[in-house]
Length: 175
Image (cartoon, rainbow, N blue to C red):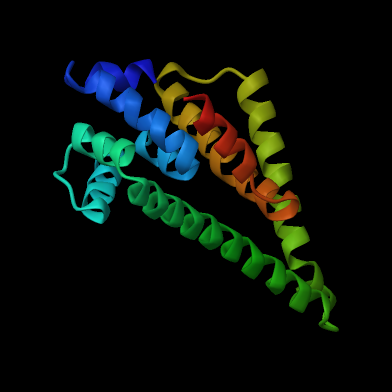
């Protein structure tokens, strides 16, 4: 959060904190999006939806002063959560359909795929932890590690155990 604030003009700091506080209580998913890499676009989309100028100050004022604005943002937040759940539901439905097939490979494909990436990730993590990496390749190795941990492992866990929407909302409320 501090790094984000350091990048913004000084006049935005109070406005952004106020906007995040308001969004955190009304639409936690939007609060998370505002502090993400596409934060400017999210603020612009919110401003467009509320019919105000494209600025953090105007959006914060519109949310604070208009109960209908809060209702619109809560609806956007609900639509985003429904889309996330629909995505997970489609993956689960695919797995149920696969389990009803007679072909053993088709039944177990997602398990095989998950097993492969789990073993590959464990081998890679063990390799970069216990072997010597040439200095020019350290950043490359770190990038791959970040991809494996942040994307591959997280996606597999999300598929098998569900998403962390509740955790994301809790983090947004802390703002």
